Amino acid sequence: MSNYELIRDAIINKKQVVAVYKGYRREMCPHTLGWKGNKQQCLFYQFGGDSSSGAILPGSDRNWRCILVDELEDVLIQDGSWHTAKNHIRHQTCVDHIDIEASL
Image 1 (cartoon, one colour):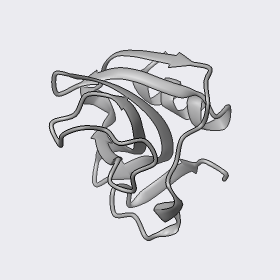
Image 2: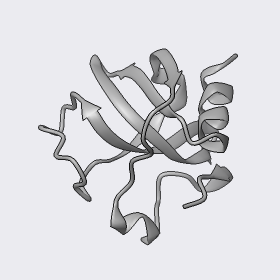
Image 3: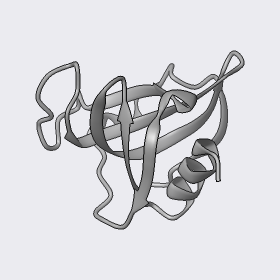
C-alpha cells in the first residue's frame, strides 16, 4: 500500500500513524486527507514522538501538523486511542481538496 492508502485506511478505521517526517519520529492521528495543489497532504494531530516545533504536550491545541504524505518514511498503522484537540472544528488550510475526513 502507498502512504496515501495507509493514511486513508487509518482515517476510516480511526487508527494511529507512526512515521518519520523530516528526521523526527512522530505518533499521530490523521484527520483530513487530500490535496493542496498537486501535492498529497494530511492534517494530523501529533500526540507523541518528536517534532522540530518543540515538546509535544498532551491535549495541546498546538499539536496540529500539516504533512506532505510523500515525505513520510517508515509508515506504520497501529491500534490505540484516538487523539484530537477541541479546536479541530476551526477552519483548516492544510488541504484544499478533501478526499476524506475523520468523523468525530
